[in-house]
Amino acid sequence: MGMTIENVSCIKRIDYLRNVHTAVRFLSLEPLLGPLPNMDLSCIDWVIVGGESGPRSRPMSASWVKGIRDRCLAAEVPFFFKQWGGLNKKKAGRVLDGRTWDGMPVVARTG
Image (cartoon, rainbow, N blue to C red; front, side):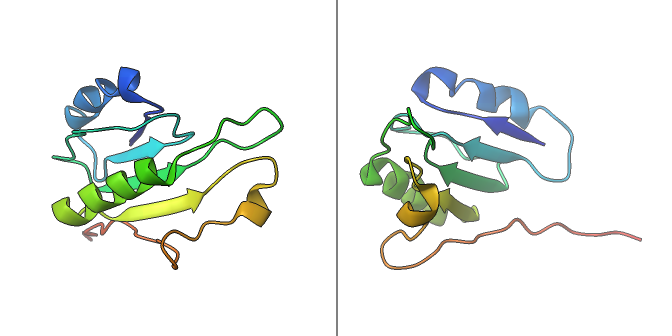
């Protein structure tokens, strides 16, 4: 189960997600519209980040993405960077610091 968090005003939604009984809890930080300082990743299994796309898309700062990526690395939470966004999202790509970030959650299967 996942929760969309666009900016700091939505961060309280994470607490609701922590209380859901599910195999995987993930955050979809897209479109990322601002920094998310001090975001608590406890009980979170996966984080996806992406910029807004389309003709009226708002820019996403690399420092916001890097801050989230670094927090995920420190907390050992898989990090997936989906896209920079913009008018032509395919041209903008999904490379961050010279590589793609394709982290996926590990799900223990039973039976």
